[in-house]
Image: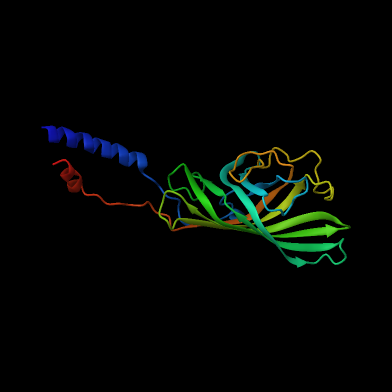
Length: 246
């Protein structure tokens, strides 16, 4: 009789436990903002060390989806820290006019994908760790002032809680909309600071911070691929479970 009670209780606990931990991985596929699959976004970069510290190690990037009114409802990239900046082409021919192109390497960062996105497989949210993040940025100068900056971004991450091969990677374009640096052209310099409808400035741990300065911009033409995601399975027979209590 004692065995029957124990086995009955164990069966009930297993049923509840299986329901509680059931995971539904993201749906493998390639999704594009150009096709309306998911939202484009906005960004901010915190300059913690100086009022004009663009392209400086320690600056932290934050990107979020934007639906025209709300930030971060569909995806969030947070806490990527600049670790290296390499000038790969200097086309400013007289010290005043032209372009400079940089390769910017980031370290750290997290990614969050909302379960309501096109990749949604049943879980309310998907969290991941950024494995690599690189940006190729072109800055344009005219009469000694920055008049614009555009970038190409590429990022890869692994999604937590599923198989080790559950990977997401993405490419996209970025453009500076405004900065707090008065040396920039009035087209991008904003004495009022970053508007509220751009992502918050954050530190490397993705905590809100009040930096010495910063910049904000857009993320467009995004392509996201999710592959290799499945629920980890460890098979256990009911006979093996019963044997523990015999």
